[in-house]
Length: 572
Image 1 (cartoon, rainbow, N blue to C red):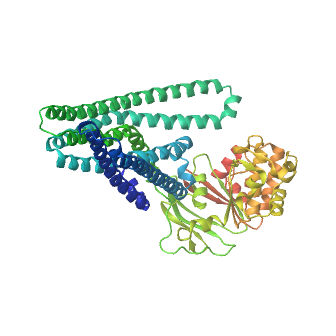
Image 2: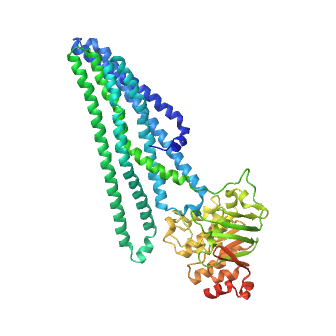
Image 3: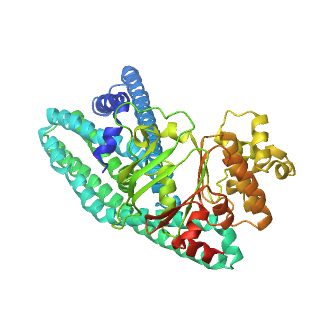
């Protein structure tokens, strides 16, 4: 019911696994000793007429065995829970580390709500497999076998009945489970889609309100919730049916043992104490099977979640340097692009094809071109968020592929078109670029980005707490926070995705002046959508359908009356 890969990932918790196996063995011994002592007490009291005073010792022994069994069960459960929690934390850390290696460019192709459902709900379901299902599986492998051997040594016929009826319960479990697995898969798919749709709706609530579509989305969420409820109820029906069948099989098997012992006892073919001992052991023999059947539903959910988890873990990651990573060259340095090509997974048409260009230190290079020309792809390749399909990017004479990715990211500052802010104070959001920065450095960066004035007007200044995405701030204010991060990081390479887009003229002009201050003396690449940005650039790269079709300064490209001149003329 669980992938071998996940079991292999749990190898670091083998000590707790050994504890579980040992507790199963101890528990089996205590069960046998408890039932034997109980049968001896009952036989002595009711068949032999022994008084209470003579039974004081066996009764104390029985009480001690009951307490010891309870302690063994608790230790078994505690070790199972501890192991499951450690495994879940390890799997969660592995998935998070994997996503950092995949990079934001490729992980954005997944829906955030579905990823969150796997990261939290999915791993919680996998935890249940390790905390409840697998311990029951260990008990099934240990307890019934030892009890069967014990019963065979006392009464062969009863032992043979136990061995003959034991496979019926796993058989019924498998038959019903195979029918329920498809429904469980549908349930998980419905949950993932509902989570993704709900998160997308909440994040886009402002836009939905503006266009009067919030009521429509309310109905969509209601329909998704209804589908999930119906799917869940169909799974629970099968789960309850399986519990009924397994309980019935265990009860009938125990009844068969009880009937044949009663008949043989009446006919004098078996003594009372051994017969009672076997009869008391019969329910304990079937108990692990019944407990396993009760957790079978959790195992099916865990299996479905594990398949999705492993699918995410199999996503291709960014390549790491072979051998020891090279050190980035000291700034300032030029960036050389040679024969650069890139094709997205599951696509035939390349996004970039054979790009050759130079980006010079101290200059602003503008990327222009129509939508879908490959500007964002080239931007992400330079940011180290994607690996080239062919060609290479070099920092001076050092290939970017040979440099540690974290070291390269420390050398670049990225200002996106729409800044991402997180729940926290304004100071925390700016210091994200350099967490160890002092308050004075944060204020200086905000001042350089023309953000200090509006931050001071907030209720608590730099200690004002903003929610996720900071909806109370305007677009221009959020962009100033992004620029303040770049000022604070003070990196030699600056990558900007037209940070002045979608702003009013006054805010755009203020941002443009801050951008000029930030870009001074740095190697700067900017995706340009506005004419003002193009005019400020020292060098322009014109992309069209993934190819570099023209390059040069604004004056040079305008004189040639080529594609750039027509593009700029259309924009004007």
